[in-house]
Length: 320
Image 1 (cartoon, rainbow, N blue to C red):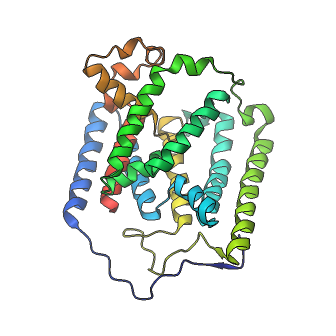
Image 2: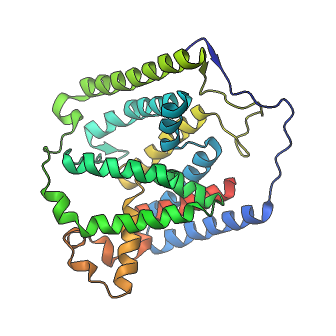
């Protein structure tokens, strides 16, 4: 983004990375057993998505690619490396995803984007979500890879993610009555090329603003292509943010090819909480949200998001 870029200053002599092999082997064995189990009881695609989830956990952990943290650091300290890495990731994702979403298929598999109506419920929900992420110390993906990596404090955040998701589904009827626009896909409304150009322009504007404000505050810009003095290692980490961005796009694309829709996380939280409440005698099946969902009555192994979330935590454990 700038020729006046630098990396984060770190001590010149760094201790060697110590590998704790016991949890590494446990994580790998659980991942292998899970993949075989899902392949036999559900489908080979579900087993593959389990592995994709694990690789997402590795990428998130090694790159420390937290979506909340990047914005927090920029707002508090005007450091924009994480923000620019996110914009790079989104731009790469748009260029890779949009052509296949426009044609509606990928390797013979029907694919669809996640298109929802923008409205008051989105604005209010996003505001509450933002407060929760700051108080909890992480977004959905950040919470999962932190838990998998051994941060037990984030178990509290995960618990209240689940509680909040269940409360939201219980109030789904009210949320649905709030004013909203019709669901809009820019690809279908504007066409492929204008949709790509519009998205890239927004990402470039955000990256440019982040660069200008960081340079104004600090006089130089930290690069997201290299951020540590330790040599980069694919297996041991840490990864530059750009590696994390590329890996997340590639693995999200694999999710699109296998599941027919992009990667998601939080729907599993609502499902876990609803099943737990149902097991305790709650009448969850009568709620408006779950009356339209087949997932509540199906085993968790059939839920793509659940499989990928658990795989993500095990992948983060292996990386840690």
